Every structure is written in C-alpha cells, then in structure tokens.
Amino acid sequence: MAVGLTEFLIGHPIRSVVDVGCGEAPWFPVLRRMRPDVRYVGIDSSAYAVERYGKSRNIRHGTFDDLGKLRLPRSVDLVVCAMCFQYVDDRGVERGLKAIRRILGGVAYIEAFTTEDDMDGDPPVGTSGPPTNTANSFQARDFRSVARTATPTSTIWIISLRSSTSVALRRIL
Image (cartoon, rainbow, N blue to C red; front, top):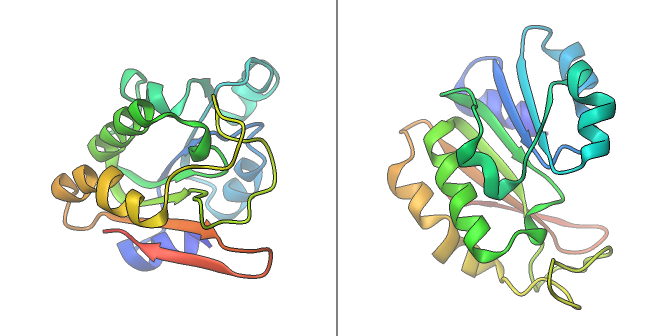
C-alpha cells in the first residue's frame, strides 16, 4: 500500500526508501523485486538485526531519535516508520520528525498507535499502559513543524489501527 500510494502521489516509481524501525527488513526483498533499482536504507536499534542482515539488506544501527545524526539520502521518495513510533518519547518524536522534514521528497508513511487504538503488544517505553497520544495530538503538535517546511510535493500519512478489522488512514499534510 505504501509503495502504490507514494507512486500515485509523486507521479513516478519510487527511487528511494528510508525504513525506520525496519527490524530484519523483511520488506526489503519484496521491495527489491518490485523496484530492482530502488535505494533502500533500513534503520533499526537491534544489534542482532544489524549484525545478521545489515550488509545484505542495508540496515544501519539507529533509532527514530537518531535520524538527524545519520547519513541519509537528501530527497527520499518514501519514509516508512511502522510499528515503532509508539516507543519513542516526545523529545525523540520531535528530533526524528525534524530529520524526516529535511530528507522528505515524497511521502512519509507512519503507523502510530494512539489512545483510540486497540493495541496488542508491548506498552510504550517508560510506561505500563497504552500510548498516551491521541490522533488529534499527532496532527496538532507533532506534525505541524513538518507540514510548515515540507516541499510542495511532500505528503505525510498516518495510519492508525482502530480495531482488528478497520484502519483509519489520515492525511496530515
């Protein structure tokens, strides 16, 4: 879905992808089959993932918070952040989004669990419960700085899993 949506919005096949929180980068081989010439950079905090798959799947060690410190392509067609955003603290969100703003040339596709979501899995770092952000707080607070300085062709979508059977796709920019 992210590839199709991005290509529709930018008007050409994707040429570059940064995948934040990529884990073992299971999406990389699929993406490579779809777009053999795509430049893919995976970012993950797992030493295991980087050691085991780093060279073969171009995974670098880092976190959402570290994006501004990493050498990344200048104009990225697609930035993906799936299944990890809820683990980033508020300052890390600010720093990561600032870095995305600098590299985004197409679409940022970000999955973010909010208080409205029926989340299964680990709670956010430093908490014992579900995420504390609401969908409106993401739009109002966290993405405003990205929206103000994004390029005219940049688009940010946030996907929120409302339940096991429905998905809310919200255009932020």
